[in-house]
Image (cartoon, one colour):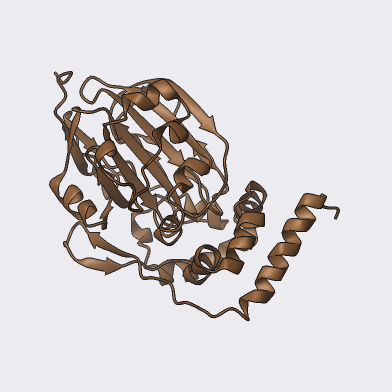
Length: 326
């Protein structure tokens, strides 16, 4: 097999980094804490590959391989293809056991590859969708951080603001949300990985933005708050009666084979599947215009303490206070 000079250089750096791994002092990864919304208890997340994440984003030697190769599209796409092979199915039983995944709520359990398991659909009754027209619901299963006013609050790392212009890459649209509200949903590999519309309305614009494939784990984000403006992402603008124009963006991450949109047409229906992520952790960003919503108090309180809250898709996360509501 023949590689380009650029790829050969990246592979050489990666090899050197792996060798250096055994000579560099090991630092135990920080525990990722979150609040379980159902019980209010603080729990510790089981993080797949926590050791490697810590090495890539904390260890200076690991950072060389991150920049040279791991963040690149070719690596995530290659791994995604491995998860599409029949041989990958043997990983499923161990993964289910390790992360205590409830397959009784899955529509089908006849998985032929790991990705079939990863993008499994759930039975409708497993995730009831709040049908109140004035309510916005969670777009996914995962952990969420929220901000009622982006312009007044630091994003993830103190001193670093979330750069809307870089994230959206549309200056006029970025101004629309400059002092609006934001919700950041993080899906780790053990989560259900289909995502759903948080509100109902008409889809008026979409955009795909090429980028890197950095991890979106808190272990990585604490070191690189600009990850969300660097990674591959797609956004959809939804015009609604009760929430103004809502921007929903899916953000790829390390080892995410692809972002797949499954909706058809220009109509968004709250709770309806919008698409799914193939293997890997990933994120969803929701942006609301100023004065359009009131985010749930428990999510605001936990986020003010820099604590994520576990949520399921379809459940109440905010309600409309917009003058456009009818």
